[in-house]
Image 1 (cartoon, rainbow, N blue to C red):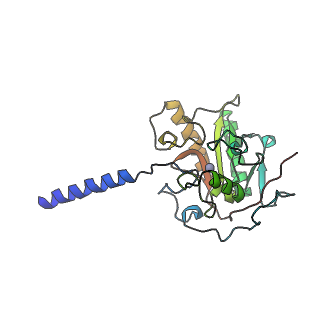
Image 2: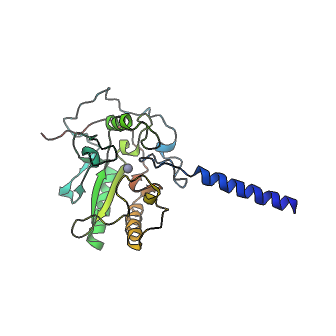
Amino acid sequence: MKKLTLWVLMFCCAGLFLQCRDPKQHPLDTEQTNSTESPENPERSGETAPDVQDGGDKPKPAEDIPSDWQELTENEGYQVDIRYATKNNFTKQKIYDCGRCFLRPEAAQKLDNIRQELEEEYGYGIKLFDCFRPRPYQQKLWDIVPDPDYVTPPQKGSMHSRGLAVDLTLTDQDGRELDMGTPFDFFGKEAHHAYTDLPDQVLKNRALLKNVMEKYGFRAITTEWWHYSLNISYPLDNWLWPCEQ
Ligand SMILES: [Zn+2]
């Protein structure tokens, strides 16, 4: 009987400990909190980015778009609202010189399939908040918010800096954002996938986005309903897209 009491006590303590460990912060795409994700994901493997294509300390915008990248634009049917190219983001500062969405070809192709399926089945569209995030821009974010709870350290790198992550939401037949319960880059538990104290329609909207993204191989992280990434191998990259004058 004593042994049983001891086990019950140990079980309770372990439960309390785990509860206390619940991440208090909500990192910006650090992709560290989802224990169900594959350990091979380079983002969380502690890799220190030896594979960075070094473009020097202050790389200039590229004259030509590198061949292994694809741009997603309104011509392809997307709404493009790259928030870090505006002050309408959590830093309240303009991080990117201009807003363009680039992804690796595999990610771009899959997203195009998703966009078409959403359009055909529901008349819905996709609004893009962030795509490729060159490392100099990741550095800029880090310089403003040097807190690993919020921003992935540039030397570690984000899946965005590999061109494999996308921040997005769904839009209705009139191009208006569906209600996802919180805005983009809301760092609170209400933005977590596990948070269900939300109107049914919000839960349905999130589930629709998650299901279609996962159907095509993208994976969610626990803390951000808007962030999805493709777990294939590409190096972190530095190149900056040019801005039309
Ligand atoms: Zn993201």
